[in-house]
Amino acid sequence: MSHRKRCAPPAPPRAAVLPSLDVLVAERPMIAARLIASGIPARDCEDLVQIVLVAAWKAVQSGRYRPDPQTEPRRAIQAWLHGITWRQAGHYLERACVRREVPVGEPRAFIDEGSVDPGGRLLARAALRALAELPARHRDLLLAAAGPGSLAAYARAHGLRPATAASRLRIARRELARRIAQRLW
Image 1 (tube, rainbow, N blue to C red):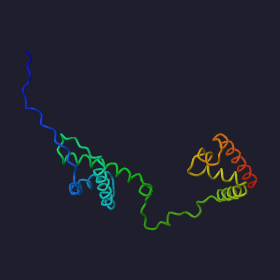
Image 2: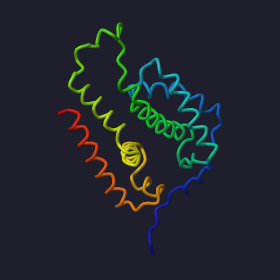
Image 3: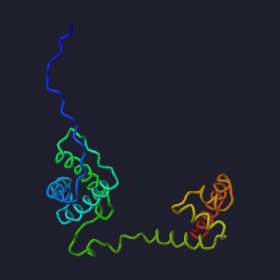
Image 4: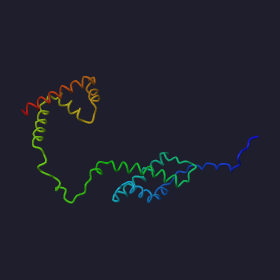
């Protein structure tokens, strides 16, 4: 005969209730506190609170809010909003305008007019002139290689094999380097 522990039967799981927009908006103070703790400046906090709320509402509408039915509803919403807040703060802090922003009273005070190397200017001008004098097929290939598209995409668009496009790119680079060297010497 086996001995079984007697205990209360487990509580039936609660059905997940989707939060309304009012429930999400009620968590604004918690979202703002998490944003400030993440390093978001106070001047930008309100904007990010709005971004978090919009992202959360879109997620609720698309069915991506799936809390654990065993968890108390408010704690589940707060934990879920914490994740969204954390991600949005990370995206905000990685923006170039935020990373490079340096507030100063007189921005021109940091510009040193003598900091531009005249030799570099001459080299840049020679390179631009040499590029302009190249045949159109070389110039187009060099500009395509410097752009956002891949060399393979350029090859497909022009009916070339990728290896052929790479070979032609090497030839165009050599020709550009030769012309720049001629201009400088």
